Image 1 (cartoon, rainbow, N blue to C red):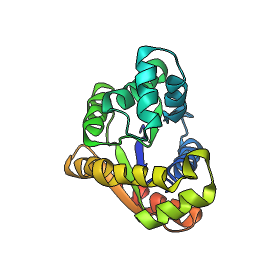
Image 2 (image 1 turned 60 degrees about the vertical axis):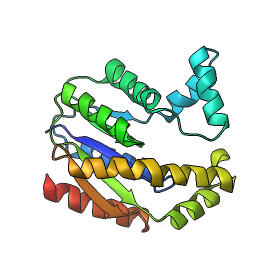
Image 3 (image 1 turned 90 degrees about the vertical axis):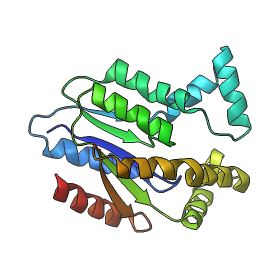
Image 4 (image 1 turned 30 degrees about the horizontal axis):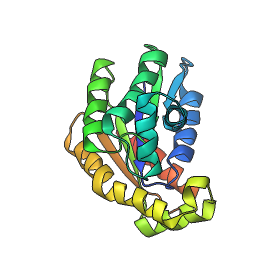
Length: 199
């Protein structure tokens, strides 16, 4: 069976870490040794914003105002990765898609197009306060300003939660929710227990 997994959750919840752990597990248990396409569009977005095109300049203005990028642009970033890199016999892991309900619906059309079956959404649930403290403590460039952090957390409450509700309401998806306010090992254990149970 080909795995199709979407990780979603507040900033700082550990999506990338848990996606990496699950990727390693999928590889270790796949007797056919198929490849995994890991779709995380942050680097692509940052490179795009540094560009000189009209579109890049508009996107950079949005970034500098700490506003959320439009859904079509977010979809374009991961859509290009699928078009350019996805092969027929590859597992697929998304990190941080989708950031709003319209983007979630775009993802549904993409997964349907690629004939993916039984996609699983893994929602790593942490409180706003926990996320804020984690972002401040890790000290990344985007995480040192509390106002910037609060805007990102506002986006989650306003937009990402609606995407999660969309996934829950669509029978095409299996949604797994885990408590992210645990150790990395405990979160991974809970993900695996629920992921394997429904497989």
